[in-house]
Length: 302
Image (cartoon, rainbow, N blue to C red):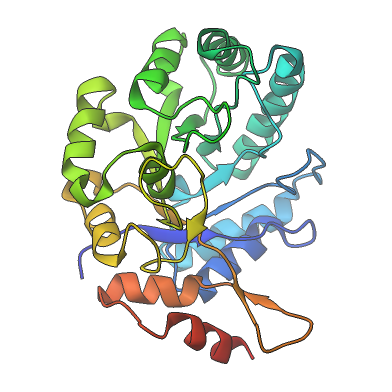
């Protein structure tokens, strides 16, 4: 099997923190992972516990997981494009960068935000202003701007918009891009011809700017601008097309992160939900689509 860096979104709990996130990722057969340092819907954050971080780093060394491939995702509620929310975005992102640096993680994925009626130009200028306020010469992390689907008034739905942002940041060596396959599909990019997508990205931005990739199938047809993730192989992108992204030689060494939906237990009146990652990662490593994926997930966790 070719070397790939494949992981998924895991939890980050106040009592176990990085150690708990790592153990969850290992239980899925992952060799990297991504987490929010608190709930994505708010900015409430518990203090970082150095003892748990030290334990996690020791276990990472034992299990050959490179901390440089681990990713933190900033919460959705940060909208650096909105003039009225810029001070909040700057304050929170400064704190988040400090927290991430304390953990030793070097990548933060950031949704670029929405212009909320201000228009694309003002939104991009606002985002540049925020990034210049938080990304300094001694910053130890890279901010990975995520490609977006184009839902509502989102910014970052095409490579040219992201290029404008990068060009405006003073310390642009700390600005990277997070490609999201579902978002790219829903924004209009053809994942079935992914090398052509990479060619366009390389021409406009440069492949060296790709910091990580979110691997998600899509519930929607291409160019729908809806942003609804689907489990691997069950959406409109398809299993084989996603494999061509994951195993693309031009992305060798780039962490791939699954953000696919949890699976509902439809036979249970209380409807529990189960993580799909153990089975999706197994499929990806074996390069064989599991036709009974959903049933196997439900059976495993019951």
